[in-house]
Image (cartoon, rainbow, N blue to C red):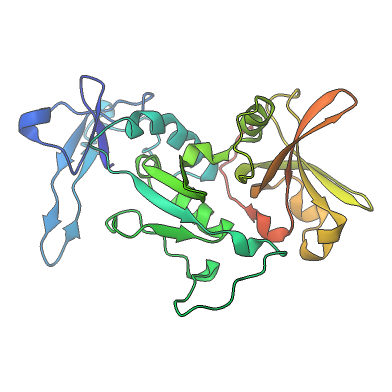
Length: 291
């Protein structure tokens, strides 16, 4: 853990912690846990170089993270997003917590994308993505594939993820939890007119049904609220870029990237995310749960 909760409800980052200023009473930031934690200073020895951090003592049940805590065990993608959203507001409002920017460069996912003429410096490809979020803060990471998004979400603890902003283009930098979301939340943003024009979003969830027609394919997603139907849409002109069959999709969970749009049919308001190829979907592994 790189952050801890103080008795006054504020969050302190390990790089800013001072015994004289902050005292010795520290807690886990998860509101469902709040286990006591201790500070472990940085080490600069030749054998072990590490940044300062916080940890539980773990000698009795009160000094361990609870099972519902985001730091109890490694998280899957869905858990990581949910816990990041839970911690993000509190962490981002803390002045002493360093914020980090991840650049999104997903243009090459688009089969219609025409790259500019080559220049001297090499443009990073999705295969060469390097995500730098721990100790290399001067050079922001760049992400060029959905696989790298999934790797990011499963490689770092949620308090680190909660410090991240995505540079989505046009000078806009948004917290991770405002870019990656559940179908239900995407539906709400869309129909409350709170989405950002011409911006693409990430949505995660399980696919429940696939209906392939001559001109369009509808891929329905599981939803918590039946009044908020959510569908992935791919048009026939892009079928040649889409390799998934129905058996590859139904019952499985994916991270999806695309354009959100409204659709009303038979007086039912629906939310859709429009994609152009298989690269706009990335399989994710999750623990067994009822979505």
